[in-house]
Length: 125
Figure 1 (cartoon, rainbow, N blue to C red):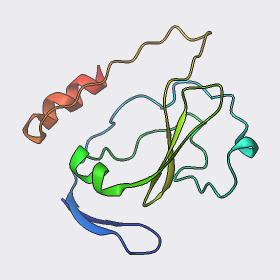
Figure 2: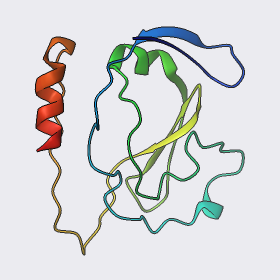
Figure 3: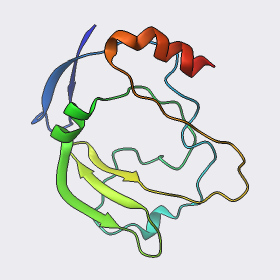
Figure 4: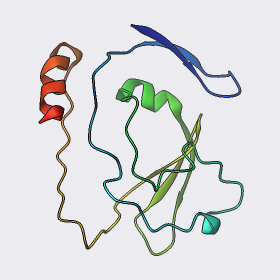
């Protein structure tokens, strides 16, 4: 199905193909992150203000669209490998976060769109 996506300002609008699958991955992050949002740099508008809570992934975007969404600003949080990257939707959070009490492992896989059924079966496993 074709879906129109846009940011709140409507200065970024794209019509993109979406494939409907029961789930993309497990809850992400796998455990609640111990993050103090009040310590973020001033003026940071997060694309997902609840990024630290485990939640389902609603959509997976391709690299072609991702690079159109990125803006130049990014911040490295002090004493961590966490990066805040500005996008047209607000800042996204990425990087390595150590969770010492979790034994859960995750393996990610990216395939071409014609293999979507195989991907869905893999993710259900």
